[in-house]
Image (spheres, one colour):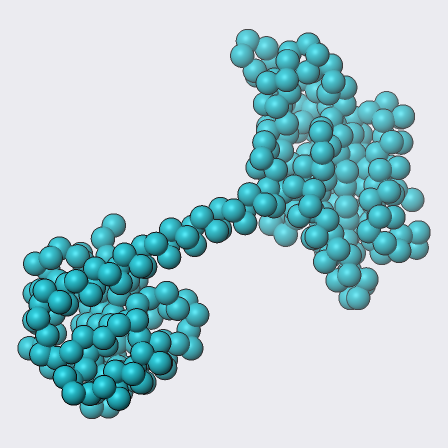
Length: 305
């Protein structure tokens, strides 16, 4: 996908000259044009724009007003604006740069200088876009379990604290479920750790499929997973947990030539709960219920008292 350019100038001839120079340099695949700032801003709102060339002095809504409107919208923060100014107009150049313009071009301009300045701004924008993608990926990695691609324990803890406080403040029900794969060590011993990793990935996917949009699924550690269900009554939480448990029980995990079956146990705790006054107590309650599920024969969900 190529770049898109927005040209704002009240002179038809100048807009044409700019477009011809940029078309000859093959810098953009899409052009938008406006004769004053307000129309230009509407085009910016309606289209993907990678760079703006804007005259400062125009009748009606001028370039300064355009820069002001753009500056108020965070989504346009990284869209560069090259302002067009008169040769002796140093005061307006400085004012335009102070109001958020990235560069300026003096009229009448040399098409070669126009292309050179545009190339610099496109390069800067490209680097900024790459950095944003990398930062988003780093942020995602910092909260995601590397194997299963569900959230990790640290992120779970942060969300638990937030939902715990929200639940206590507004008296909304909240459910927390701890899952543990039954006899998972036997899978690793019999089929190898690669098979075990494959099953962990598949189980995480099953839990995700059986959760709702507001719910959070995390790998707690080893073969343990957790599910946080905000604004959920006991019946709804039990339905979600049991559906996931049943699907895991019914799944044949095909790894290489092996069809592996296993089950999962779970401990569910609902909050508010008179015996729970902290996150640690909430997690401990879920752990205790999980332990009871194991003691009672596994492959079941036990609700904490």
